[in-house]
Image (cartoon, rainbow, N blue to C red; front, side, top):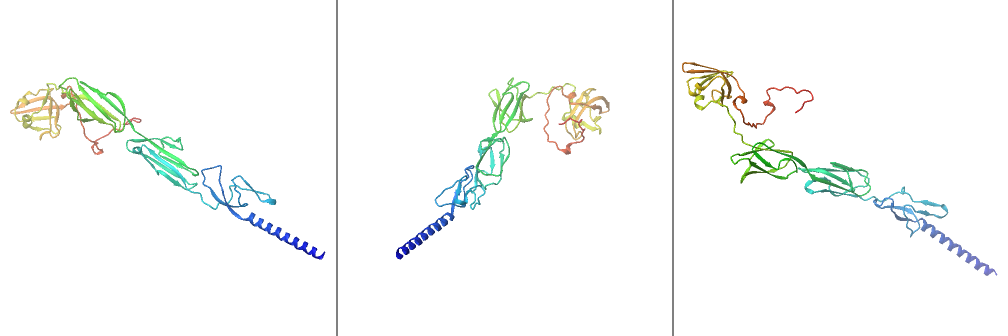
Length: 355
């Protein structure tokens, strides 16, 4: 009997040891720090974060799952868990089209750290303008800068360019026909062929582009010019007009200029030292026209008021004359750059009037 009791005590002790060992193993296994991965399912663009949580080995958890730790209750896994990893960089794809139209900077696949800001600059090339900037498929208009703020996901940005458009105004004058004619639109760098047909074969047309005369090429009975558009442009075709000079306009020839012995300071009195045919022809009402000579360094444009003869000299009294007095019909073109130093006087404009 005593031996049987001893065997029961030994068996009970062994059972106690086995149960104790099992309990210790469960505690160690449950308390082990197993590294798991939590995926933020609400924002797939965020890279996974590696965190340490106390879970039973072999289990997997998501961001919304709850871990059961037995009698102690349940512990929810939230976004406040301590991250031990680091988010990888996020990519923004930037492009420009057409490539000849301009640039976006930075460009290509641009890496940026999570949560950072990044600004893009859009610049058109000469002759182009910004048509649109598209961000993640949404138009932003023709902006020249765009900034992504607090970046947490991938983005795309595309700059679109288009050629600038200009107005070309083409007009025609007398004795010519030009084509095309009227107001046209043309993009930067476009070539336009201007064709001018004079009314008669003896007329040579004159072509002005932005006020400057340009050379044309004769082709049959027409004249051609290739215009390249670089901005708003005015084109005017007309013909040479022979000036109509009245009979009372007297141009000082070389012989008369040699015999013009003196000119008063105000040019009101002219003295010819010989009775030349030119001097003899002068009468009140005539208009004297002279180019630049030693005696007339600024030229002459005077109207005769009186002519008197004394010996071999002829004295001519004059007043000021105008181009309208000397030329009945004609055209005059003057092309001369002006600077502030050329201004002799000015008159303030009336308030509200501008040039």
